[in-house]
Length: 316
Image (cartoon, rainbow, N blue to C red; front, side, top):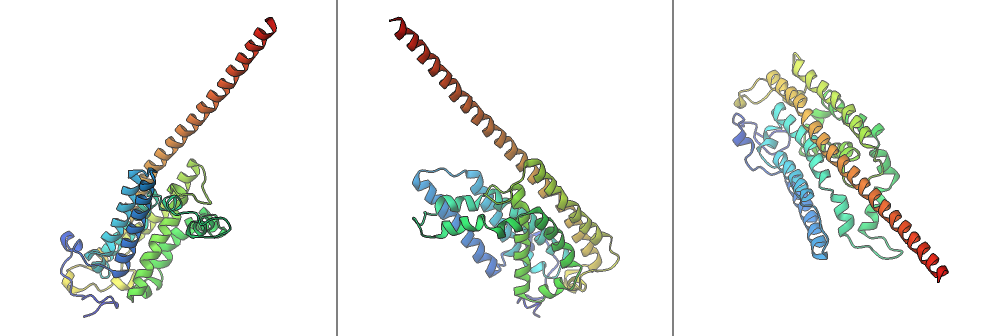
């Protein structure tokens, strides 16, 4: 029996980690991930051949980000996520809060700007178009906290507590669109906070921490609301298949627990990354000041030597 236009049977056996991690590829996400890896790999190879260095940590982070998307969208987790609220919530949390952080720490835009060749005077190639996009008014709007924080919050409450979620879960296209939306929302929320790539909105480190903590409590409240509900709140998961041997309300409570607990993971990850970035920035500033002081010292020494030379010339 087909379920939600997804071409999968409802008679799934009870969920286990082994079954959840079995390969079951969604073609859209499989192709997107492979293309993403291929383009990033091309950029790294191009820089290496040119004699430029690209930090290994960035490559590892980006690859881990892509693999995290593959994990939730191209395994049995995607099948079980169609009928189990708890498994769906794992998908949602990973693709909206873990994958974006890892992808952003990989600095794909910076890599593209360094790897793509300039188009030449008066012409516009991929590099010029990307630069124009990064500095566009559109980017300034969608990376501003007045936009990203409400969007981050609304993506939870407006989706799960309205009929929109059931509508999207009713078709394969709708489900893919929802997952792409989760990933995109995560990227625009975390980009101004943690992103290595250049962006139009880049506040100081303290403001970035405030932005991070402005969104997280709402995430925790959402999880608590699901945990405390006395009846199933989402139509899609009200009648789980009997073969799963689960009860809808307890599965919803588990989903709430996952949402509540998961909000802590990205907070810790982002804070650690921010502290490293902050420390690195301070070190770079200190080195710049040292170089400037050295230059000033050299000028003073040159002036003093010139003064001595002039005295010597006068004496002669």
